[in-house]
View 1 (cartoon, rainbow, N blue to C red):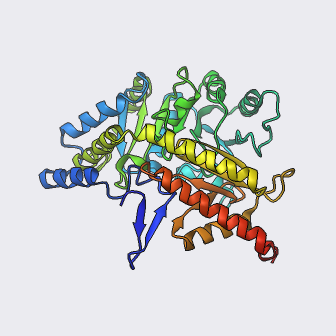
View 2 (cartoon, rainbow, N blue to C red):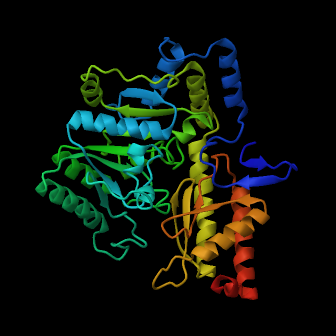
View 3 (spheres, one colour):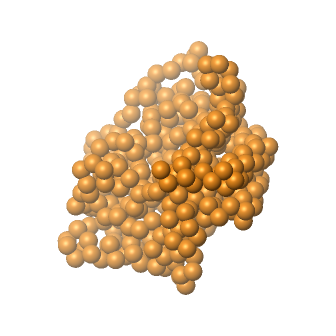
Length: 410
């Protein structure tokens, strides 16, 4: 219920990482909407139903005007797979640029554009190009660089130039609006605009993957790509996880031009359960709850408070190298030394194990598995934030006093 989950013995755990139960586990309004629609009708989307149109209209109000065509699906992986098809059909190109450590889904097509996965499987395909993660803390261009935005954007331009010299053509640049698996990264403002300019000149499109971070998680904006500024609009936006609060529903939003090029194939796109009446009723209920409970403002307020507490811990505990985030998307980068910023992987694993003993569920991300990730349901409270940080302080202080470093050394 809410931000809590319970085991078979009734013990209550605080959930700090479940970005699927976006408005809280088993939210009564969402459960009610599903139940009521299930009693009336649930069928495939060959049958017309008002819920589909009503939901598309509601979604369109949250997005820039040019993103006016919607495809409904069952999962984020399906959404990104369709985005890839749309991009290739529209541009008539094949190649894709992605960020290092990116993850875009579990389908074969998406494993191919997810360095997080393909590096441990069959490797990188010829049509896939990997750009450096725009990480100003431990990336190739850091906070002391005179213009890290331009530097990271130029890395993408170099990739495009090199690909074109080989006769290859760019179909799309795929990016998680806030890279999560890469370590809870906040791309510097202006980066998307510069990338889009290079990609568009190459005849490609810009795909913003909002599957983990959309629907108000960042607080100040409904979509994470909007953090880059009002002048930036992606060509395709994919969404998933939080849409149904645990129910399988996903969406691709794109422009009329891209949708028409896709339709010109003469092969219709059909998804049996995408946009079915129950899924859309649930989606509408989630939007209602976000609005009714002011969850965007709540995410900003609680997120700022949590960041403030975590930054106080950073001053106290040298193992905390960086605290970064926006709204209720926050990463705590644990390091072994301040100068080299070596990932404190074992220490991070120890911390999350200790948290679990305290009935707090937290996890790690990043290439070094050393970044504590906070992506809780949006009903997460200030009291929850204080509890977690107080426990973190206790664990880290205890570690220092008992010299648990010996454990890590072994």
